[in-house]
Length: 82
Ligand SMILES: [Zn+2]
Image (tube, rainbow, N blue to C red; front, side, top):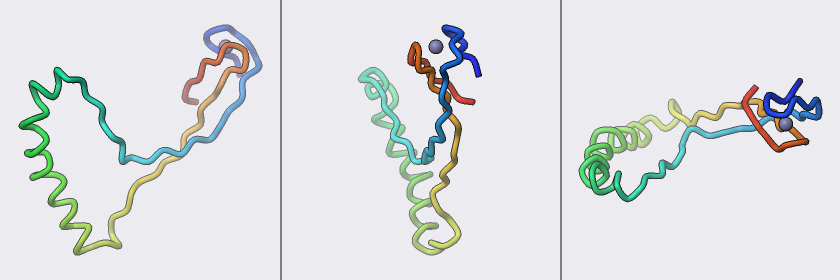
């Protein structure tokens, strides 16, 4: 495999697991405009039902983990998904 940035063949491929429960990061501008009303609404309509579902049907739902391959160039440090 060749590095798309520097063309080096010195590339290693790693398996990376990632969970779908990611924390979102927002800037101060997002909080001023959207965050203060969006989060309660989001919580009310998405998190609360999800919690209820989790409470009453804990075996049906689980966190989704997926595995992806990430190639890392040893020469320039670029990494990308395979
Ligand atoms: Zn490279």
